Length: 100
Image 1 (tube, one colour):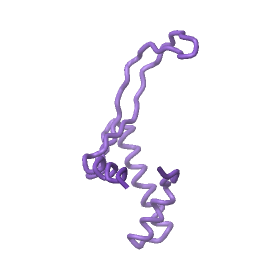
Image 2 (tube, rainbow, N blue to C red; image 1 turned 90 degrees about the horizontal axis):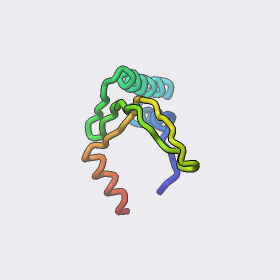
Image 3 (spheres, one colour; image 1 turned 30 degrees about the vertical axis):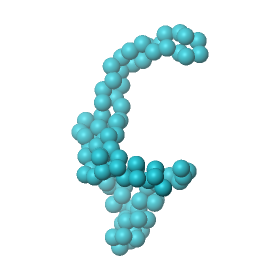
Image 4 (tube, one colour; image 1 turned 180 degrees about the vertical axis):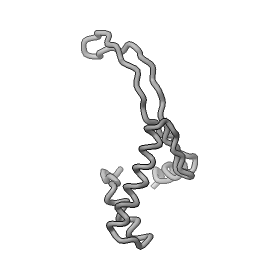
């Protein structure tokens, strides 16, 4: 498994190479898309990208957890968490990558 991480810079460079916008315009486009996705998630909407997957927000209720080191019970406050569910096409594509 590779240690490479895809970054915003990599995405904007790919847009630059494939679409032909300037590097600056490509970076602005990637930033704009990410901002729209973030804003939608913060407002409670799901973000579905066809053939990729769905990002959504889930509310977790308060519960009692346990410190594994001491065994002491610790209250865990309610919170919102980001979840990602890959599409079947993405799952299949990743699975194919495992066979190489």
